[in-house]
Image 1 (spheres, protein in one colour):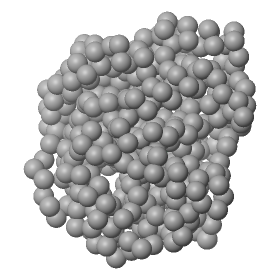
Image 2: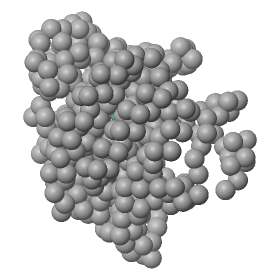
Image 3: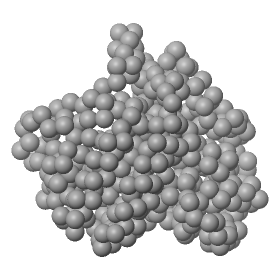
Image 4: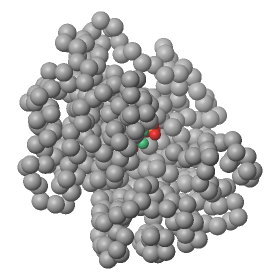
Length: 422
Ligand SMILES: *Cc1c(COP(=O)(O)O)cnc(C)c1O
């Protein structure tokens, strides 16, 4: 591979063109392993950012893509429909909470968030009392496009860089009560007062249920989410749940909302939707919201991406969801969680470690100071694992098929890596 060309011409996520970090050349992937060009096998701790829940090069998913490819890889969705999209949406309506009945397919997670926010704005416009503010939580992450970024943590996404262009929304303190902690009612107080003070301007609350991902890997108490739903009902505000990272079993429930037994008015899905094969996302809503939006001045929802409902992506998403339904994913995720509960706590003994936490197939080690990504990643690769830390967070969310021995190898590499670089 022409690594020099890559370094000189290709932008990678959140990486400097002046001082690029090392990029490792991957030639193929199989099961829970990524293979470097020189043949090195790495146990994948990231599922390619939450997406590859079934691992790589899966025969069932490969077959779904191949079968669809020979029929039609793409066709416009305006005025046309097709079996892969119908089968996928049927499955999504079936799997998600009962009230969510209308599915909007789109290109990526960030776009599904844009779609959700636009639905909420159009809803209030149609109702005849336009509202233009969103209430969200500090340390949240909802994507990198502008509207999604405007509800992402202001410090992490450096809102000041885009001041004057970026809409300004309302941020409540993020929950302090951890998932397994005892609930403290005070945890919801800042959220409650921000909602009460601005209710008549707020179109919707948007948040990540239970797990705040890229904004800090915080795992919070289900009662917080339950209170949010109650308060949204009390103040007549829509609730958008962004399950782009948490959806499809990652937290031990099919959807993280289930931990609190709540149903949002609008739900965003992405990442693992296609089993990590290609980009696709979905925004689901209730009949009430959809029909209100379409009963308004515009007469329809004002969005329609070129590759909406792409048949290849729909086919592989449908196959991935069937595969999930047919495998005992609850047992696999519960086994991963039980392993984390055993092997993560000893890491607290390291001086550099501030805390460890876990839920479902997510394990997190937070350090006191930022880790040197270049150095620790070299260590990880030498130890045969793929883990990509950011800031003070070294975390893993492996494919569900990872074995206990492989999971231990990931956590041992984190321990030895922290010892050698911190
Ligand atoms: C990754 C992510 C997004 C953005 O999805 P993209 O596909 O990267 O645009 C939005 N919300 C959450 C919670 C995410 O984890």
